[in-house]
Length: 349
Image 1: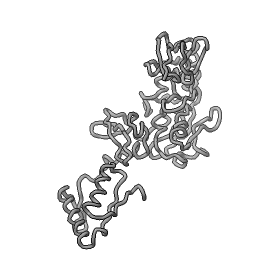
Image 2: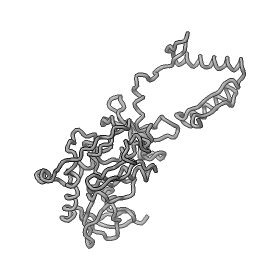
Image 3: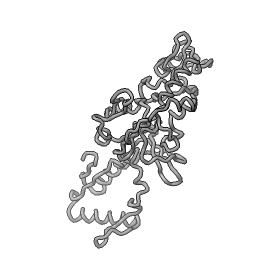
Image 4: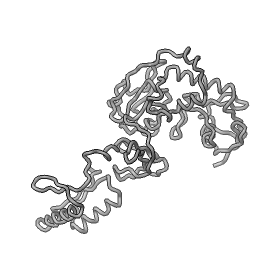
């Protein structure tokens, strides 16, 4: 792809043709405040925080302005500074100020943009009016929707539509009452939402947040165990306790996307009901056993059934949670060791 030469704040840069000014700036380590931009989504130009000044053209929305040969961009022009400040103030005057208690604290794009642009505390006091007080939608078992913290960036709407193809949410109502809503403004649990959490992962503020959210001390890169697709994940850990999961954007299988099980189904790991050793039924009760004892018992009983009733008396059901290699070995065991073709897979049920 052809490289285009341009400049930002006096720095001579280059980027592939078709790249937007915002994307090019971020690629070269130049921060331009933004809320509605996400690399996975088509640019929308909703928040107006990414305003820049282009020589010879005036103010421009950097997330929708492609780089051109000889383009001269200023991110700190008085006109763009004023436009960004006004756009930011309009967001902050009705935004809840409880940043310390927010699940997105220190990871909030609005917080970051505010720190970068700066605000006049006295001016904000004069502008601030009664903040919206809509009830928090806690109907979903995995995440909450707090309309009061929403900045109407539309990332959740575009994620649900462009990436997931579900369309469970959209913009609704007008003016001060504008909000992200399900059809007929029903609780999100009663909508078409499949709880994949893709909107939660991309929300730039605390409007969409997991019910259980603790920042990890470290992360471990691994593969999701729920099915044989092989989605890459990063397990967030505190000590030896898993506290969260995020998708691996570098994994070619899922490229960061996850389903509801992969994103929210990790709590079984530390469940007190999880089996930690084999159990053998003796006199109607399950009793702990060693792996050698359990495997010997299984082999003896399967061999006894085959000897007494023939190999077709046996059947094996495989699991989607096994890898392709594990499923291959199971069908090999079924056909070669048990001498039967009675094997099926739970994905067909």
